[in-house]
Length: 101
Image (cartoon, rainbow, N blue to C red):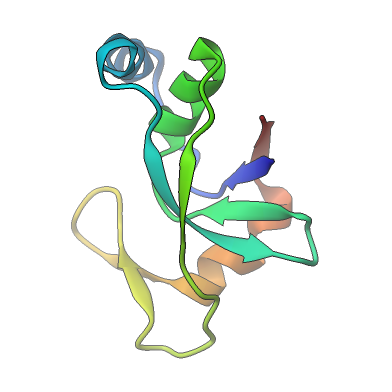
């Protein structure tokens, strides 16, 4: 399984904290869209959790979200302040860091 980290905004200090939590909590659930054209999932969230899972040898559980061109289909931004259109996130997946499990 491959996951494109389309919001790849992590920092090392936060990643270390997520790894520490994940050692107790186990594999994360990640909302993602399957992208046939890229043969991978486009993660709508969780760039720290995906990286931490890889580091720990865990495989994330994918909560599949449908691709949509609809302007109303948005996902809350990681900073909590803005929404992102699902299509805009997914259409940039080819530019993203891709983590393979």
